[in-house]
Length: 392
Image 1 (cartoon, rainbow, N blue to C red):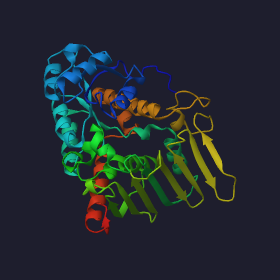
Image 2: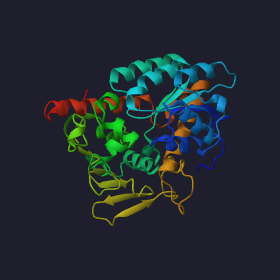
Image 3: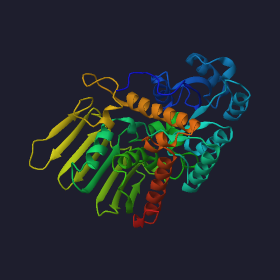
Image 4: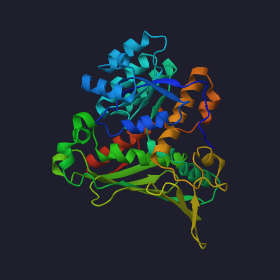
């Protein structure tokens, strides 16, 4: 169980690029990083493309004014001159900027935590992975939902053979908040998401489905996709060629089949984030709207609801427990879990502790690469007319 005691010798000096006042994700990063004040300490930032607004925001966060910078280039340069300069940076900016900022951060000798999708192409990810290895640095990806520890319970139960051989994978991440174009016109955080020059080759495939795809990999690390078919639509026409709805069919190498529905136009839906894994003996199902519960259905037996924090759960699940079963955890705790693992990974990398890195389960650069490959293959299938393509 986690109780705030330090997992590394001291907090890492940490900064943010982006994540300012109008950001949809900045606060999630800060609550995740700072939940355990033994993991990260926020000491600097280039929070906004508007330098004055970014400085005002940073002062209100309690960051020293002389460490609030107009852009990331200045921050990396000036912080490198300090004995107490930053050691890690989070990138919470639009997709099209991730690649150049991530490279600059690694060149400056910093560990990196980056929003998803990581970059536009898998070739870019492979290039940055090589650079990270050369510099001896960690690149983590903020698949924030993956810190929900009941996903680790699913992983353990599948490894233990509790559901038998996996036959069907049913994935969904949908909501209805973009069922019209109002937010496209009024929300700064939404405008860039539907602009191909900034968002890249996809909207909901990158913004939503990469979360769920990574979570499925976390749960089933040995399940590999052989081929897929993606059919995507732009129901709000001004978003074309970017999709606001997509259906994906998957064939896995072991013969299992899968589906993914991802959508921002599921009108009336507040949170349709669900994972169901069907095996030859039983099924497991988890909903983001009920993150503390896991449904376990054994054929011919009463349905079981497993509750977060209970002693009957696997140790790998309860290691990330924070509040005990009587109290409810949620997305903030999930982000805190992955940020703590980012810190442990960075500390281990600094010390050359490869054993810790080998056994640590967190969204690393390989997870980021898989997310970009997922988008590339889905877009390739859709653009060919919704045809089956080999998963490359």
